[in-house]
Every structure is written in structure tokens, then in C-alpha cells.
Length: 189
Ligand SMILES: Cc1cc2nc3c(=O)[nH]c(=O)nc-3n(C[C@H](O)[C@H](O)[C@H](O)COP(=O)(O)O)c2cc1C
Image (cartoon, rainbow, N blue to C red; front, side, top):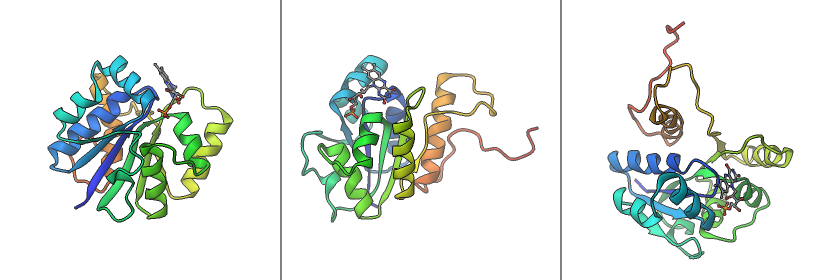
């Protein structure tokens, strides 16, 4: 199995990236973490932690966003997937335009050209038309868009339940067997 790259950008919802890394670590998956400059601010503001602390507590290899030649951006490295979680409107726009100016965007563009799985977790409210157009373009190019919009049909009791709703969908798309969150059986109503 190859590594999974998790990128945290400056959209609200750094907790999604944190939880994803925790779960991937508990499943024994090798992860690389790259955090954009804006992502460092939201990670500190929302989760009260640095990227170094997050990498250490989840056994992730931490890459510098400025290191454009990092392993996450290698076409020949064994990278299974890139997950940008959360994904800002800025990063969506760069990806839709083919811009790879830091390790987050470069890893994602390499994932596209190598036909690796690229999963984007955008968050904004409301979305501007340009965000929606960019998401349409990226989806058409094979990216999987999982908006940070948890469902309420499983009766979440906590923020952790809401976060896990999204994490479960990401794990499904990474083809990882898991017990995160409840699955809808069709007998609930
Ligand atoms: C506290 C805070 C919350 C933010 N929330 C969002 C958000 O939910 N969605 C978004 O697209 N941008 C949000 N931003 C703005 C991004 O951080 C900004 O557009 C930045 O340029 C993103 O750069 P990056 O994609 O390299 O991380 C937020 C910024 C701050 C400081």
C-alpha cells in the first residue's frame, strides 16, 4: 500500500483533517501531512495546535508547503491518494486553473496527471458561482468533491459525530474498511 497525502488548507474545518489523520493512523496507513500557510492559521485557531504537533500525534510525515519537490508531489512515488481536507476556495481556484504553486496544489495536480484519487473537502457558505464552476470543472476531471456538509439523518449527538459523518464518506472513497459513523440501512424511517 502506498502513502496517503492529507493537505489542510485555510478553509474552516481543520478538525476534519485532524480526524482523518487520526483514523488513517489507527488503520495503520502511512500518511504525509502538508499544511498551507493559511491552514496553519486555521489549525491553530480552531484546533489549538501546530502542524508539528498534529503530525507527531498521528505519526504523519510532515512536509513543508514551500517544498515544491516533496515526495507528495512525485509522480513515481507510491502515493495512493491526495485528500485536501478542508479545501479552501483559493485552492479550488488554483486547481481548476492548473496552478501548482505550493506542495498542496502541486501534489493535487500530480494526482490528476497520474490518475490518482484526488478527494476535495470544500467549505464555504454561501459558495460563489466561481467556486461552483471550479468544483464542476474539477469533478469533471475526476476529482471527488465531498463538501463539508454533514447529514443529520443519523441523529448526531456531538461535533465529533458530525465530523465523523464526513470522515466516513472520505474513507469509503479511499476504499478503506471502517466502523466510523453509522451506515444507513433503509429501515430507519
Ligand atoms: C479564520 C478563517 C476562516 C476561513 N474560512 C474559510 C472557509 O471556510 N472557506 C474558504 O474558502 N476560505 C476561508 N478562509 C480564507 C482562506 O484561508 C484564504 O482564502 C486563503 O488564501 C486560503 O489559502 P490556501 O488555499 O493556500 O490555504 C478563512 C480564513 C480565516 C482566517
